[in-house]
Amino acid sequence: MSFEVVLPYFFGAFFAIGGAVITVGAIRTMIQVGKVRAWSRAEGEILSASIRSETHLMRTGSRIYGKSHTPIITYRYTIDGKQYKGNRIAITEYKGSRKSAESVLARHSKEIQARVFFNPGNPEESFLEARAPGLLWNLVLGLFCLSAGILALSATQAITAFFTN
Image (cartoon, rainbow, N blue to C red; front, side):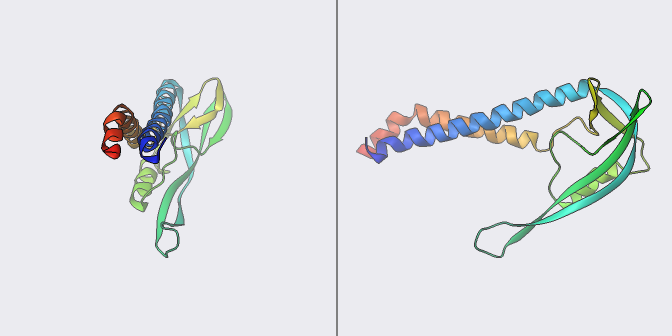
């Protein structure tokens, strides 16, 4: 089989499998968000809040750098007389611009009583928010790649005819 014949199959399979993996991951995260929303809630107290900034090389071989900012929050809550500490804000990590990190900190400042979602079966497992930042983008990307892969696989006859003529 020639390269021109195999290429459409490879392209289609690569995108379909990659898109399926991303989509399944996004759906699993959506299910987890639903479960966390059903968890018990407790009043909590914010102990500390800060922003961790990291510099990343954005392009290999060049000196172009980017910064990402992650809000870091530690909180305390009490369940049945026992105190717990947590540091998970949401199901997936917030990471992005300084402005977005600051907005997360503003929602969870020391002056505001924290609402903590905790797992009733394992009270040490907790989140401040029953959400997953970036979930929508992952779902859109996964569905786009899956659709592109399926389209490429279904159109392989036409693509093969194009390359062989």
